[in-house]
Length: 160
Image 1 (tube, helix red, strand yellow):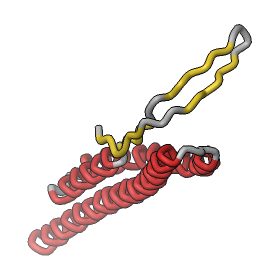
Image 2 (cartoon, one colour):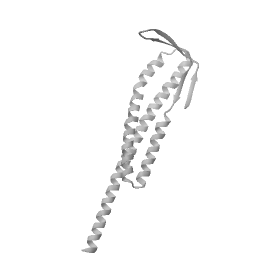
Image 3 (cartoon, one colour):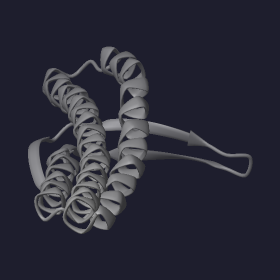
Image 4 (tube, rainbow, N blue to C red):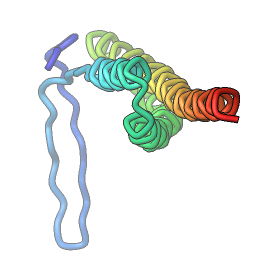
């Protein structure tokens, strides 16, 4: 866990329920950044795809291609949801009055923007890896067909 910035801002949050109401005081605002994990995860899967294609394993390419398409969908959905929450964060940031809290809120907003961009890049990386695996599988099948055709042609030329 990487803590980017912490500040001693006090913010009063009034919470009302049907039974009672209470006030929660938030003493610190923290901005925690986890955006490197999905990016490195996607990079690792792309390297695994490359390994499968170098070894000419059709089955491994198919498995990795399907897994990466699933990951691309999940990470792509995360990117969409991350971008969708940015306007809400921006409106909330405009309502902060304390100067120290504004600095922390701006850092949190820029971290959320950066996280959304990294999710988008990771989605593109996953799609590229999946396409590479699928194309590699098809290429290996074409190579197999070509080899079988060459062997059949060689057999026909020598035995007929």
